[in-house]
Image 1 (cartoon, rainbow, N blue to C red):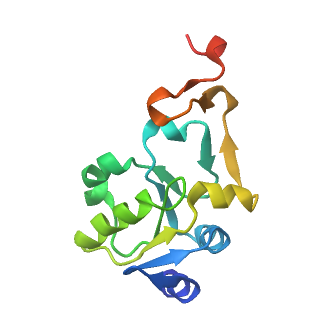
Image 2: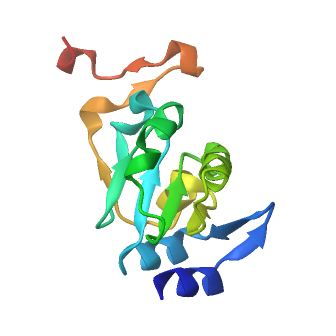
Length: 141
């Protein structure tokens, strides 16, 4: 029933379903599982705050697919909604059907002031990913 509700809310393009952050938040509160596919070093500062949440890096997604239940509803998220599409393609190839992309990722989620968990001690800075470092170096020894 949740899968049907999510599909009725979602838009369909690029061979997958997309939920807006607000739609995804509502579906998560009804039992959908949100999976954040950002790499570990990008997740410690800000995380989605929903009832059922897992952080599984895209690079390790194949290692966890056997733990997924094909009847559950999954919302796949990342920072902006790009790598999540790659994750959805992998899941579809593995036979999963009840999967949705979080359009706009964490960036749009946060713009709408939807709940997130922030750990300021994990804030990173740098001009590109290869130069990221902790802002609060005195806390990291």
